[in-house]
Image (cartoon, rainbow, N blue to C red):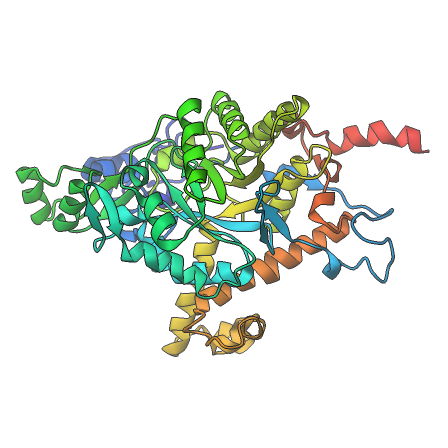
Length: 534
Protein backbone atom coordinates (compact mmCIF):
# COMPACT_ATOMS: atom_id res chain seq x y z
CA UNK A 1 0.00 0.00 0.00
CA UNK A 2 1.33 3.45 -0.89
CA UNK A 3 1.95 5.76 2.02
CA UNK A 4 -0.43 8.71 2.34
CA UNK A 5 1.33 10.28 5.28
CA UNK A 6 2.19 13.35 3.23
CA UNK A 7 -1.24 13.95 1.66
CA UNK A 8 -4.59 13.65 3.39
CA UNK A 9 -8.02 15.06 2.71
CA UNK A 10 -8.43 15.65 6.45
CA UNK A 11 -5.59 18.18 6.41
CA UNK A 12 -6.39 19.58 2.96
CA UNK A 13 -3.12 18.41 1.44
CA UNK A 14 -2.12 16.55 -1.70
CA UNK A 15 0.92 15.70 -3.77
CA UNK A 16 1.93 17.01 -7.19
CA UNK A 17 2.21 13.56 -8.79
CA UNK A 18 0.31 10.33 -8.08
CA UNK A 19 3.25 7.90 -7.99
CA UNK A 20 4.51 8.96 -4.59
CA UNK A 21 7.39 7.42 -2.69
CA UNK A 22 6.02 4.51 -0.60
CA UNK A 23 8.57 5.33 2.08
CA UNK A 24 7.30 8.78 3.06
CA UNK A 25 4.57 9.89 0.68
CA UNK A 26 6.68 12.59 -0.97
CA UNK A 27 6.79 13.08 -4.70
CA UNK A 28 9.74 11.07 -6.10
CA UNK A 29 11.04 14.35 -7.52
CA UNK A 30 10.33 17.34 -5.29
CA UNK A 31 10.75 20.48 -7.38
CA UNK A 32 11.37 24.07 -6.39
CA UNK A 33 8.53 25.69 -8.35
CA UNK A 34 5.74 23.38 -7.08
CA UNK A 35 2.51 25.21 -6.14
CA UNK A 36 0.89 22.15 -4.50
CA UNK A 37 0.78 21.88 -0.71
CA UNK A 38 1.64 18.44 0.62
CA UNK A 39 1.65 18.02 4.41
CA UNK A 40 5.31 18.87 4.71
CA UNK A 41 4.77 21.87 2.44
CA UNK A 42 1.72 23.11 4.32
CA UNK A 43 3.51 22.63 7.63
CA UNK A 44 6.22 24.93 6.31
CA UNK A 45 3.69 27.76 6.43
CA UNK A 46 1.14 26.71 9.06
CA UNK A 47 3.11 24.50 11.46
CA UNK A 48 0.95 22.93 14.17
CA UNK A 49 -2.28 23.61 12.29
CA UNK A 50 -1.43 20.68 10.02
CA UNK A 51 -1.65 18.33 13.00
CA UNK A 52 -5.42 18.79 12.98
CA UNK A 53 -8.26 18.42 10.49
CA UNK A 54 -8.48 21.56 8.36
CA UNK A 55 -9.19 24.33 10.93
CA UNK A 56 -11.38 26.26 8.50
CA UNK A 57 -14.00 23.51 8.81
CA UNK A 58 -14.03 23.50 12.62
CA UNK A 59 -17.60 23.46 13.88
CA UNK A 60 -19.11 22.29 10.59
CA UNK A 61 -17.34 18.95 10.15
CA UNK A 62 -16.28 15.73 11.78
CA UNK A 63 -13.09 13.79 11.11
CA UNK A 64 -11.69 10.28 11.44
CA UNK A 65 -8.74 8.16 10.41
CA UNK A 66 -8.18 7.28 6.76
CA UNK A 67 -5.63 4.56 7.41
CA UNK A 68 -6.19 0.94 6.45
CA UNK A 69 -5.66 -1.03 9.67
CA UNK A 70 -5.63 -4.34 7.70
CA UNK A 71 -8.44 -5.74 9.85
CA UNK A 72 -12.00 -4.47 9.97
CA UNK A 73 -15.51 -5.84 10.33
CA UNK A 74 -15.65 -6.80 6.64
CA UNK A 75 -13.15 -9.57 7.42
CA UNK A 76 -15.84 -11.30 9.49
CA UNK A 77 -18.91 -12.87 7.92
CA UNK A 78 -22.34 -13.45 9.47
CA UNK A 79 -23.46 -17.07 9.07
CA UNK A 80 -27.03 -17.59 7.89
CA UNK A 81 -29.12 -20.32 9.53
CA UNK A 82 -31.93 -22.47 8.16
CA UNK A 83 -32.77 -25.04 10.84
CA UNK A 84 -34.73 -23.97 13.91
CA UNK A 85 -35.06 -20.59 15.59
CA UNK A 86 -34.23 -19.02 18.95
CA UNK A 87 -36.26 -16.37 20.69
CA UNK A 88 -39.40 -17.17 18.70
CA UNK A 89 -41.40 -20.15 17.54
CA UNK A 90 -39.94 -21.89 14.49
CA UNK A 91 -43.13 -21.16 12.59
CA UNK A 92 -43.12 -19.55 9.11
CA UNK A 93 -46.13 -17.46 10.09
CA UNK A 94 -44.35 -16.06 13.15
CA UNK A 95 -40.64 -16.07 12.43
CA UNK A 96 -40.75 -13.02 10.21
CA UNK A 97 -38.01 -10.39 10.51
CA UNK A 98 -40.38 -7.66 11.72
CA UNK A 99 -40.98 -9.77 14.82
CA UNK A 100 -37.32 -9.69 15.86
CA UNK A 101 -36.90 -7.92 19.20
CA UNK A 102 -34.05 -5.39 19.13
CA UNK A 103 -34.72 -3.84 22.51
CA UNK A 104 -31.83 -3.80 24.94
CA UNK A 105 -30.92 -2.43 28.35
CA UNK A 106 -27.72 -1.03 29.80
CA UNK A 107 -26.85 -1.56 33.42
CA UNK A 108 -28.81 -4.76 33.01
CA UNK A 109 -27.84 -6.09 36.45
CA UNK A 110 -28.16 -2.83 38.36
CA UNK A 111 -31.06 -1.90 40.59
CA UNK A 112 -32.32 0.29 37.76
CA UNK A 113 -31.58 -1.03 34.27
CA UNK A 114 -32.02 1.53 31.50
CA UNK A 115 -34.14 0.10 28.66
CA UNK A 116 -33.48 1.23 25.09
CA UNK A 117 -35.51 0.54 21.96
CA UNK A 118 -32.44 0.01 19.78
CA UNK A 119 -28.94 -1.12 20.84
CA UNK A 120 -27.29 2.18 19.94
CA UNK A 121 -26.67 5.43 21.77
CA UNK A 122 -24.87 8.69 21.19
CA UNK A 123 -21.40 8.75 22.68
CA UNK A 124 -20.32 11.80 24.66
CA UNK A 125 -20.41 14.92 22.49
CA UNK A 126 -18.98 17.81 24.41
CA UNK A 127 -17.94 21.37 23.82
CA UNK A 128 -16.78 21.02 20.23
CA UNK A 129 -18.75 23.44 18.06
CA UNK A 130 -20.18 20.82 15.71
CA UNK A 131 -21.91 19.14 18.66
CA UNK A 132 -23.36 22.41 19.92
CA UNK A 133 -24.66 23.40 16.49
CA UNK A 134 -26.49 20.09 16.07
CA UNK A 135 -27.36 19.31 19.68
CA UNK A 136 -31.13 19.73 19.61
CA UNK A 137 -31.52 17.45 16.62
CA UNK A 138 -29.44 14.75 18.26
CA UNK A 139 -31.02 15.12 21.70
CA UNK A 140 -34.60 15.07 20.44
CA UNK A 141 -33.76 12.31 17.96
CA UNK A 142 -32.34 10.20 20.80
CA UNK A 143 -35.36 10.88 22.98
CA UNK A 144 -37.97 9.91 20.39
CA UNK A 145 -35.95 6.85 19.37
CA UNK A 146 -35.70 5.78 23.00
CA UNK A 147 -31.93 5.57 23.50
CA UNK A 148 -29.33 7.21 25.72
CA UNK A 149 -27.75 10.55 24.87
CA UNK A 150 -24.44 11.34 26.54
CA UNK A 151 -23.58 14.98 27.19
CA UNK A 152 -19.86 15.19 26.63
CA UNK A 153 -17.13 16.92 28.55
CA UNK A 154 -16.33 20.59 29.18
CA UNK A 155 -19.84 21.97 28.69
CA UNK A 156 -19.90 24.09 31.85
CA UNK A 157 -16.30 25.18 31.49
CA UNK A 158 -16.88 26.34 27.92
CA UNK A 159 -20.16 28.11 28.67
CA UNK A 160 -19.56 31.87 28.40
CA UNK A 161 -22.66 32.51 30.49
CA UNK A 162 -21.71 30.06 33.24
CA UNK A 163 -21.35 31.46 36.75
CA UNK A 164 -18.53 30.16 38.95
CA UNK A 165 -17.89 30.65 42.66
CA UNK A 166 -14.69 29.46 44.33
CA UNK A 167 -13.86 27.53 41.17
CA UNK A 168 -17.17 25.62 41.14
CA UNK A 169 -19.95 26.11 38.63
CA UNK A 170 -23.17 27.52 40.08
CA UNK A 171 -25.08 28.13 36.87
CA UNK A 172 -24.66 26.97 33.28
CA UNK A 173 -27.37 27.85 30.74
CA UNK A 174 -25.65 25.70 28.10
CA UNK A 175 -25.77 22.62 30.34
CA UNK A 176 -29.39 23.35 31.19
CA UNK A 177 -30.18 23.54 27.47
CA UNK A 178 -28.48 20.22 26.72
CA UNK A 179 -30.34 18.39 29.45
CA UNK A 180 -33.72 19.95 28.72
CA UNK A 181 -33.48 19.44 24.95
CA UNK A 182 -33.55 15.69 25.58
CA UNK A 183 -36.22 15.78 28.26
CA UNK A 184 -38.68 17.87 26.23
CA UNK A 185 -39.57 14.87 24.05
CA UNK A 186 -38.44 12.03 26.35
CA UNK A 187 -41.09 9.51 27.37
CA UNK A 188 -39.50 9.11 30.82
CA UNK A 189 -39.01 5.39 30.29
CA UNK A 190 -36.64 4.44 27.48
CA UNK A 191 -33.15 5.81 27.26
CA UNK A 192 -31.67 8.49 29.52
CA UNK A 193 -29.70 11.69 29.50
CA UNK A 194 -26.16 10.97 30.68
CA UNK A 195 -23.55 13.47 31.89
CA UNK A 196 -19.93 12.71 31.03
CA UNK A 197 -17.16 14.19 33.18
CA UNK A 198 -13.43 14.56 32.68
CA UNK A 199 -10.72 16.04 34.91
CA UNK A 200 -11.77 19.63 34.16
CA UNK A 201 -15.44 18.89 34.88
CA UNK A 202 -14.68 17.24 38.20
CA UNK A 203 -12.45 20.14 39.25
CA UNK A 204 -15.19 22.60 38.34
CA UNK A 205 -17.97 20.71 40.10
CA UNK A 206 -19.92 20.01 36.90
CA UNK A 207 -21.15 16.62 38.12
CA UNK A 208 -22.41 18.11 41.40
CA UNK A 209 -24.22 20.80 39.41
CA UNK A 210 -26.13 18.41 37.15
CA UNK A 211 -26.93 16.05 40.01
CA UNK A 212 -28.21 18.66 42.45
CA UNK A 213 -29.63 21.34 40.13
CA UNK A 214 -30.83 19.37 37.11
CA UNK A 215 -31.64 15.98 38.59
CA UNK A 216 -29.36 14.05 36.24
CA UNK A 217 -28.86 10.62 37.79
CA UNK A 218 -26.62 8.89 35.22
CA UNK A 219 -22.95 9.96 35.30
CA UNK A 220 -20.20 8.74 32.99
CA UNK A 221 -16.59 9.13 34.08
CA UNK A 222 -14.10 9.52 31.27
CA UNK A 223 -10.52 8.25 31.14
CA UNK A 224 -8.39 9.85 28.48
CA UNK A 225 -9.89 11.22 25.28
CA UNK A 226 -11.90 8.46 23.70
CA UNK A 227 -10.00 6.78 20.91
CA UNK A 228 -7.25 9.38 21.22
CA UNK A 229 -4.74 9.42 24.02
CA UNK A 230 -4.64 13.11 24.92
CA UNK A 231 -7.23 15.65 26.02
CA UNK A 232 -9.79 17.29 23.80
CA UNK A 233 -9.03 20.34 21.69
CA UNK A 234 -11.32 23.02 20.33
CA UNK A 235 -10.69 26.15 18.31
CA UNK A 236 -11.18 29.61 19.82
CA UNK A 237 -11.57 32.38 17.27
CA UNK A 238 -11.38 35.44 19.55
CA UNK A 239 -8.74 36.66 21.96
CA UNK A 240 -11.40 37.39 24.55
CA UNK A 241 -12.61 33.80 24.46
CA UNK A 242 -9.08 32.47 24.78
CA UNK A 243 -8.42 34.67 27.81
CA UNK A 244 -11.71 33.66 29.40
CA UNK A 245 -10.99 29.95 29.14
CA UNK A 246 -7.44 30.32 30.38
CA UNK A 247 -8.84 32.13 33.43
CA UNK A 248 -11.03 29.08 34.07
CA UNK A 249 -7.98 26.85 34.22
CA UNK A 250 -7.87 25.41 30.72
CA UNK A 251 -4.68 24.99 28.74
CA UNK A 252 -4.83 27.50 25.89
CA UNK A 253 -2.19 27.57 23.14
CA UNK A 254 -0.51 29.77 22.20
CA UNK A 255 -0.64 31.70 25.48
CA UNK A 256 -3.30 34.40 25.03
CA UNK A 257 -1.78 36.44 27.84
CA UNK A 258 1.51 36.78 25.98
CA UNK A 259 1.70 40.25 24.39
CA UNK A 260 3.60 39.01 21.35
CA UNK A 261 0.97 36.31 20.81
CA UNK A 262 -1.77 38.93 21.05
CA UNK A 263 -0.03 41.08 18.45
CA UNK A 264 0.41 38.11 16.10
CA UNK A 265 -3.27 37.21 16.44
CA UNK A 266 -4.43 40.77 15.76
CA UNK A 267 -2.10 40.90 12.75
CA UNK A 268 -3.79 37.78 11.33
CA UNK A 269 -0.74 35.51 11.49
CA UNK A 270 -3.05 32.88 12.98
CA UNK A 271 -6.83 32.86 13.28
CA UNK A 272 -7.61 30.61 16.23
CA UNK A 273 -6.29 29.45 19.59
CA UNK A 274 -6.36 25.84 20.80
CA UNK A 275 -8.06 24.88 24.04
CA UNK A 276 -6.88 21.60 25.53
CA UNK A 277 -8.17 19.44 28.38
CA UNK A 278 -6.03 17.61 30.87
CA UNK A 279 -6.11 13.84 31.22
CA UNK A 280 -6.32 11.99 34.48
CA UNK A 281 -4.10 9.22 35.80
CA UNK A 282 -6.52 6.71 37.33
CA UNK A 283 -5.69 4.48 40.29
CA UNK A 284 -8.02 1.73 41.41
CA UNK A 285 -8.32 2.91 45.03
CA UNK A 286 -9.29 6.50 44.25
CA UNK A 287 -11.54 5.35 41.42
CA UNK A 288 -13.53 3.02 43.67
CA UNK A 289 -13.85 5.78 46.25
CA UNK A 290 -15.07 8.21 43.60
CA UNK A 291 -17.73 5.77 42.35
CA UNK A 292 -18.96 5.19 45.92
CA UNK A 293 -19.25 8.94 46.39
CA UNK A 294 -21.27 9.32 43.20
CA UNK A 295 -23.71 6.67 44.31
CA UNK A 296 -23.91 8.31 47.70
CA UNK A 297 -25.03 11.52 45.99
CA UNK A 298 -28.01 9.73 44.46
CA UNK A 299 -26.58 8.68 41.09
CA UNK A 300 -28.57 5.65 39.93
CA UNK A 301 -26.27 4.48 37.13
CA UNK A 302 -22.53 4.99 36.73
CA UNK A 303 -20.86 4.57 33.34
CA UNK A 304 -17.19 4.64 32.37
CA UNK A 305 -15.81 5.66 28.96
CA UNK A 306 -12.26 5.01 27.89
CA UNK A 307 -10.21 4.73 24.74
CA UNK A 308 -8.04 2.33 22.81
CA UNK A 309 -5.02 2.00 25.05
CA UNK A 310 -2.45 -0.78 25.17
CA UNK A 311 -3.60 -4.26 26.28
CA UNK A 312 -2.28 -3.79 29.81
CA UNK A 313 -4.59 -0.79 30.21
CA UNK A 314 -7.55 -2.70 28.80
CA UNK A 315 -7.05 -5.34 31.49
CA UNK A 316 -6.62 -2.66 34.18
CA UNK A 317 -9.81 -0.91 33.06
CA UNK A 318 -11.82 -4.13 33.05
CA UNK A 319 -10.53 -4.93 36.53
CA UNK A 320 -11.52 -1.49 37.84
CA UNK A 321 -14.95 -1.64 36.19
CA UNK A 322 -15.52 -5.09 37.67
CA UNK A 323 -14.53 -3.99 41.17
CA UNK A 324 -16.74 -0.89 40.96
CA UNK A 325 -19.62 -2.80 39.33
CA UNK A 326 -19.86 -0.19 36.58
CA UNK A 327 -23.22 -0.27 34.79
CA UNK A 328 -21.86 0.40 31.29
CA UNK A 329 -18.23 0.43 30.17
CA UNK A 330 -17.58 1.97 26.76
CA UNK A 331 -14.37 1.36 24.82
CA UNK A 332 -13.60 3.64 21.88
CA UNK A 333 -11.50 2.03 19.17
CA UNK A 334 -8.94 3.80 17.02
CA UNK A 335 -10.14 4.96 13.65
CA UNK A 336 -13.23 6.84 14.76
CA UNK A 337 -13.25 10.55 15.38
CA UNK A 338 -15.51 13.52 15.88
CA UNK A 339 -14.12 17.00 16.29
CA UNK A 340 -10.53 18.18 16.13
CA UNK A 341 -8.45 15.21 17.23
CA UNK A 342 -4.85 15.19 15.95
CA UNK A 343 -4.74 13.51 12.54
CA UNK A 344 -1.45 11.63 13.14
CA UNK A 345 -2.89 10.28 16.39
CA UNK A 346 -6.13 9.10 14.76
CA UNK A 347 -4.13 7.24 12.13
CA UNK A 348 -1.01 5.99 13.87
CA UNK A 349 -1.81 5.58 17.57
CA UNK A 350 -4.00 3.29 19.67
CA UNK A 351 -5.72 -0.04 19.09
CA UNK A 352 -8.11 -0.43 16.11
CA UNK A 353 -11.68 -1.37 16.97
CA UNK A 354 -11.73 -5.08 16.03
CA UNK A 355 -8.48 -5.75 17.91
CA UNK A 356 -9.85 -3.84 20.91
CA UNK A 357 -13.11 -5.80 20.88
CA UNK A 358 -11.15 -9.06 20.95
CA UNK A 359 -9.06 -7.88 23.92
CA UNK A 360 -12.08 -6.73 25.91
CA UNK A 361 -13.96 -9.97 25.29
CA UNK A 362 -10.93 -12.00 26.41
CA UNK A 363 -10.75 -9.96 29.64
CA UNK A 364 -14.46 -10.51 30.19
CA UNK A 365 -14.02 -14.25 29.68
CA UNK A 366 -11.29 -14.37 32.34
CA UNK A 367 -13.38 -12.34 34.79
CA UNK A 368 -16.36 -14.62 34.23
CA UNK A 369 -14.27 -17.76 34.78
CA UNK A 370 -13.09 -16.27 38.08
CA UNK A 371 -16.66 -15.61 39.15
CA UNK A 372 -16.20 -11.85 39.11
CA UNK A 373 -18.58 -9.14 37.93
CA UNK A 374 -18.58 -8.48 34.18
CA UNK A 375 -19.98 -5.04 33.28
CA UNK A 376 -22.23 -4.39 30.33
CA UNK A 377 -20.06 -3.26 27.42
CA UNK A 378 -20.50 -0.72 24.64
CA UNK A 379 -18.13 -0.15 21.77
CA UNK A 380 -17.42 2.97 19.75
CA UNK A 381 -14.95 3.44 16.94
CA UNK A 382 -16.24 3.96 13.43
CA UNK A 383 -19.52 2.01 13.54
CA UNK A 384 -21.93 3.06 10.81
CA UNK A 385 -24.27 0.12 10.17
CA UNK A 386 -26.06 -2.86 11.64
CA UNK A 387 -23.73 -5.52 10.19
CA UNK A 388 -20.83 -4.14 12.22
CA UNK A 389 -23.06 -3.98 15.29
CA UNK A 390 -24.19 -7.58 14.90
CA UNK A 391 -20.61 -8.82 14.55
CA UNK A 392 -19.45 -6.95 17.65
CA UNK A 393 -22.35 -8.36 19.67
CA UNK A 394 -21.80 -11.90 18.39
CA UNK A 395 -18.09 -11.72 19.20
CA UNK A 396 -18.96 -10.77 22.79
CA UNK A 397 -21.10 -13.82 23.54
CA UNK A 398 -19.61 -15.70 26.48
CA UNK A 399 -22.24 -18.43 26.52
CA UNK A 400 -25.16 -16.47 27.94
CA UNK A 401 -25.66 -13.89 25.20
CA UNK A 402 -23.68 -10.82 24.19
CA UNK A 403 -22.13 -8.63 26.87
CA UNK A 404 -22.08 -5.83 24.28
CA UNK A 405 -25.39 -4.16 25.02
CA UNK A 406 -25.07 -1.08 22.85
CA UNK A 407 -22.96 0.54 20.15
CA UNK A 408 -21.92 4.13 20.78
CA UNK A 409 -22.04 6.41 17.76
CA UNK A 410 -20.98 10.01 17.25
CA UNK A 411 -20.04 10.84 13.66
CA UNK A 412 -23.07 9.22 12.03
CA UNK A 413 -25.67 10.91 14.28
CA UNK A 414 -23.96 14.24 13.59
CA UNK A 415 -23.99 13.41 9.87
CA UNK A 416 -27.72 12.63 9.99
CA UNK A 417 -28.57 15.91 11.69
CA UNK A 418 -26.22 18.02 9.54
CA UNK A 419 -27.47 16.41 6.33
CA UNK A 420 -31.09 16.89 7.39
CA UNK A 421 -30.59 20.56 8.20
CA UNK A 422 -28.74 21.18 4.95
CA UNK A 423 -31.41 19.63 2.76
CA UNK A 424 -34.24 21.35 4.63
CA UNK A 425 -32.48 24.68 4.11
CA UNK A 426 -32.09 23.95 0.39
CA UNK A 427 -35.80 23.05 0.24
CA UNK A 428 -36.74 26.35 1.88
CA UNK A 429 -34.61 28.23 -0.65
CA UNK A 430 -35.86 26.20 -3.61
CA UNK A 431 -32.35 24.88 -4.26
CA UNK A 432 -32.83 21.14 -3.88
CA UNK A 433 -31.14 19.13 -6.64
CA UNK A 434 -33.78 18.23 -9.17
CA UNK A 435 -32.71 14.59 -9.07
CA UNK A 436 -33.54 14.55 -5.35
CA UNK A 437 -36.80 16.51 -5.38
CA UNK A 438 -38.22 14.63 -8.38
CA UNK A 439 -37.63 11.30 -6.65
CA UNK A 440 -38.39 12.14 -3.01
CA UNK A 441 -40.33 15.40 -3.00
CA UNK A 442 -39.50 19.03 -2.36
CA UNK A 443 -40.80 19.37 1.21
CA UNK A 444 -39.45 17.79 4.42
CA UNK A 445 -42.82 16.18 5.10
CA UNK A 446 -42.30 14.24 1.87
CA UNK A 447 -38.59 13.47 1.67
CA UNK A 448 -38.26 12.28 5.28
CA UNK A 449 -39.86 8.87 4.95
CA UNK A 450 -40.47 8.65 8.72
CA UNK A 451 -42.18 12.03 9.15
CA UNK A 452 -45.62 10.49 9.67
CA UNK A 453 -44.26 7.90 12.08
CA UNK A 454 -42.52 10.58 14.17
CA UNK A 455 -45.67 12.69 14.21
CA UNK A 456 -47.62 9.69 15.48
CA UNK A 457 -45.05 9.14 18.21
CA UNK A 458 -45.55 12.70 19.48
CA UNK A 459 -49.02 13.79 18.23
CA UNK A 460 -48.94 17.13 20.04
CA UNK A 461 -45.52 18.17 18.77
CA UNK A 462 -44.91 20.25 15.66
CA UNK A 463 -42.42 18.86 13.19
CA UNK A 464 -39.71 21.34 12.31
CA UNK A 465 -39.94 23.23 15.62
CA UNK A 466 -40.74 21.06 18.66
CA UNK A 467 -39.14 18.16 16.84
CA UNK A 468 -36.41 19.54 14.55
CA UNK A 469 -36.05 17.99 11.13
CA UNK A 470 -32.60 16.89 12.20
CA UNK A 471 -34.25 14.74 14.87
CA UNK A 472 -36.57 13.25 12.25
CA UNK A 473 -33.54 12.43 10.13
CA UNK A 474 -31.72 10.78 13.02
CA UNK A 475 -34.82 8.75 13.95
CA UNK A 476 -35.11 7.65 10.32
CA UNK A 477 -31.46 6.56 10.19
CA UNK A 478 -31.64 4.68 13.45
CA UNK A 479 -35.15 3.24 13.34
CA UNK A 480 -35.73 2.65 9.64
CA UNK A 481 -32.19 1.72 8.60
CA UNK A 482 -30.24 0.42 11.59
CA UNK A 483 -33.26 -1.07 13.35
CA UNK A 484 -34.85 -2.71 10.33
CA UNK A 485 -31.49 -3.89 9.02
CA UNK A 486 -30.63 -5.46 12.37
CA UNK A 487 -33.97 -7.26 12.46
CA UNK A 488 -33.27 -8.71 9.02
CA UNK A 489 -29.85 -9.96 10.06
CA UNK A 490 -31.31 -11.53 13.19
CA UNK A 491 -33.98 -13.26 11.14
CA UNK A 492 -31.27 -14.48 8.79
CA UNK A 493 -29.46 -16.18 11.67
CA UNK A 494 -32.80 -17.23 13.20
CA UNK A 495 -32.03 -15.29 16.41
CA UNK A 496 -35.10 -13.22 17.24
CA UNK A 497 -33.89 -11.67 20.49
CA UNK A 498 -30.58 -9.90 21.03
CA UNK A 499 -29.76 -12.22 23.95
CA UNK A 500 -29.90 -15.17 21.53
CA UNK A 501 -27.08 -13.89 19.32
CA UNK A 502 -24.13 -16.28 19.58
CA UNK A 503 -20.44 -16.32 18.82
CA UNK A 504 -21.17 -19.15 16.38
CA UNK A 505 -23.17 -16.72 14.25
CA UNK A 506 -19.95 -15.34 12.78
CA UNK A 507 -16.83 -16.70 11.13
CA UNK A 508 -13.65 -15.12 9.83
CA UNK A 509 -12.68 -14.78 6.21
CA UNK A 510 -8.93 -14.66 6.84
CA UNK A 511 -6.45 -16.46 9.06
CA UNK A 512 -5.29 -13.12 10.43
CA UNK A 513 -8.81 -12.16 11.53
CA UNK A 514 -9.14 -15.58 13.16
CA UNK A 515 -5.84 -15.18 14.98
CA UNK A 516 -6.85 -11.79 16.39
CA UNK A 517 -10.42 -12.61 17.37
CA UNK A 518 -10.20 -16.31 18.26
CA UNK A 519 -13.11 -17.00 15.91
CA UNK A 520 -12.47 -19.78 13.42
CA UNK A 521 -12.47 -19.28 9.67
CA UNK A 522 -15.33 -20.53 7.53
CA UNK A 523 -13.19 -23.27 6.01
CA UNK A 524 -11.93 -24.40 9.42
CA UNK A 525 -15.52 -24.62 10.64
CA UNK A 526 -16.53 -26.59 7.58
CA UNK A 527 -13.69 -29.06 8.05
CA UNK A 528 -14.63 -29.48 11.71
CA UNK A 529 -18.36 -30.11 11.35
CA UNK A 530 -19.04 -31.74 8.03
CA UNK A 531 -17.67 -35.22 8.67
CA UNK A 532 -19.76 -35.52 11.78
CA UNK A 533 -22.96 -34.50 10.02
CA UNK A 534 -22.77 -36.69 6.91
